[in-house]
Structures are given as structure tokens and as C-alpha cells.
Length: 225
Image 1 (cartoon, helix red, strand yellow):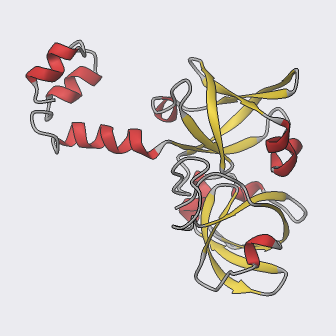
Image 2: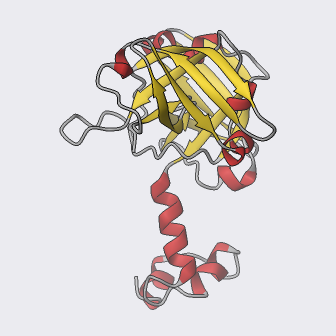
């Protein structure tokens, strides 16, 4: 589990590609201070397991599913990557709950400045946008950000200078792919409603989601909420 607060900007030293997999070698400093083989490190928001370790770099295997779901396959030697160690139970929780399991990739459609902020508009598939809400949380390449605007085909975030300086966002350009992980809480709530794990929710929640039944306080009360 992660928080989306990037600890360090690492550099890809090597990427060895297999038929449907890869081994990623990343140079780093801070995230290696207490790292051990078997630990989890988020690389551009993707939870990877450390398989090899030296004082200056670590290696991790990337599975077929991970390559399909994320933008890790587009990395090359020299690419900057956002790094974060797994969340410590005794630390401050500065971002939001990030699992390191990417929902999909989006494409940066626009980048523009607004005084001291930089805005990024990202396109996303409908299956992802359903979990993106204005003023909610989203992780882009593992960075915990607040959604500023939501549109029909994408959403926008506004980034402070510090975030841009300490992450790979400063290197992003229009047309680049970026990893998206939506807030996990919304996905669990939807699953519970549709599966009927919440009393009275089976069937009725699906009908409401499909627009057959208006979702009102009266409907919620009548169905056990």
C-alpha cells in the first residue's frame, strides 16, 4: 500500500525485454536506504517487487499483465521514474490510499500554466472515468493528486510547482501516456452494492446504476441503506 507521495525521482538504467515480460533496473538513493529483496516499491505508480539489490540500484520483474495495463513498456534507459516505498504504519498519511495496481493508462491532452500552477488534462476510458470525481483523489504515475475538473472524455488536475519539480511531470509532454489509478474506495463500494453484500442492494443497485431507478434518499431507505 502506498500514499502517492513520491519520495524520489529515479532513473531507468536498463530494461531487458522478454516476449511478454521485462526486467527493470532502476538507480535510486532514498528508497534504497532500508530496502530488502522482496520489498515493494512503486515505480510510476506500479507496485513492483525488488528481486535484486545493490547500494545504488534495484531490479524488478514486470509481468505481461502489468505491461498491458501500464505505461512501463514505454520506458527506456535514462527515463525518469517516480519512486515510493510501501507506506509505513508509523508515518504520516499525506496523500490517499494507493494500491499500486494501475486501472488503465491515459493520454495527456493539454498542459498549460495558471499563475504558479500547471494544469494537465488527461483523457481516460469510460470504465475509469466513472470513478473520477471532482475534488476527489487520483494517482497519475503514482502521484497523489486532486481532480480539479471532470469532462466527458477525461479530467484535469492542477499541480503546484513543488510537485512538478520532484516528480516526472516536468518531463511530460502532450501525447505522452500516463498511468492512472482511481480511488480504490469507490470501486469497493460499487462492488458491494452490485454483489448484494449490502442488505437490500442486490439487483436494485444495478438497476439504479443503469438509470432504471432514480437514486434518491427515498430509494436508499427503501432498500436498506
